[in-house]
Length: 226
Image (cartoon, rainbow, N blue to C red; front, side, top):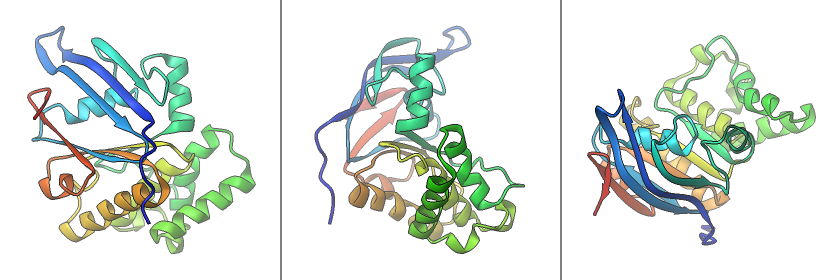
């Protein structure tokens, strides 16, 4: 049974602009968007259209040149707000999982929990809960470099969920996976929205995934177009 959207606005962006090389390389040309709690929104567009840059602004990995932005009621361009956002409200999944290869799956999952000061008892329980939910509990004591690509991406998703975020930003999470594994990862993200009420913003160039989201925002040349 799906959890309906509450109508609460988690992301509110207005006229966001971003360029590089002192304005000579425009990337975002005035993007506005709202995302509600409990919905899955696709940022669909070709490589270089500005999808990843927009996600980076939402997650506080980069700063807009101009425009207004709040995420979970916080300003991701303010250092104090950004730290609170990452520790309590926001998870990020990258195309390349960005795990620490010499650590085990379990040790990778514990990294954000340690940063947030989670107790050992809570951390152990949360690790087991997430690992069982995505089918990697039998891999917890394996090093990341010894598990499959799909298992690595599921580990990355668990890591992003460790601190029970309200919003998950996923930047081409299926882009480096084969079709079957990609479908499995997408289904997991869809399940998180339907069953746990987490909001997901998914950047993808694959139309079949975009069309399975609740809404599609088409990104072209740094703008959201109809």
